[in-house]
Figure (cartoon, one colour):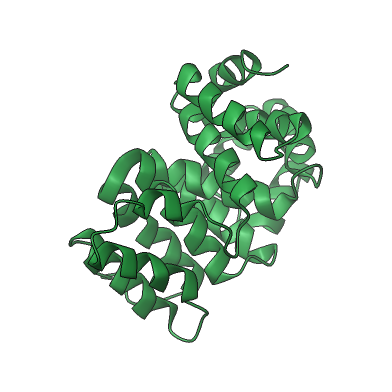
Length: 231
């Protein structure tokens, strides 16, 4: 097995079809891509686990299931917890509303290794949050339960509460929002979240790594958008 195939088998437990085809048609290209991905995804200012979780959130926001599920598998292999994952999956609501939360069920389903592929993901925001709590079973659901209380009370601060410290830091949530707008090639909006992140302590190195992982999932234009906001 080539180094590229072995690398992706280690990450995903299987060799994805797209990896196999790149190897079959252009093995050198796979080798170069593997080297680039390996370097970008290694522990740095952001850990490998955090990078996978950020990519899950980015892809949930843009409703791209395939990449979201691949990174879910990798994040769980890196030791991510269900409560952590859920917080990353809630932030995309700010960008794409309930559609993003419905997509999030597919990541949560993957992480929980449910055999039932017919998990119901429709309903109102309140119903979606309740279903998430039910799926989490014996996990710590305290953060999402507080959000549910906000929804039931009609609290206008619901979105602001998403960014509070929970199992995931506020810094990482701001980085995720910057990443979501970056992969959607909305550089001006991404820049506003980047600036807001700096105000709460997000470092330039963390922003650089956000831009690089965004490039992995959305191509070189995502780096164009990130670079415009770097100091």
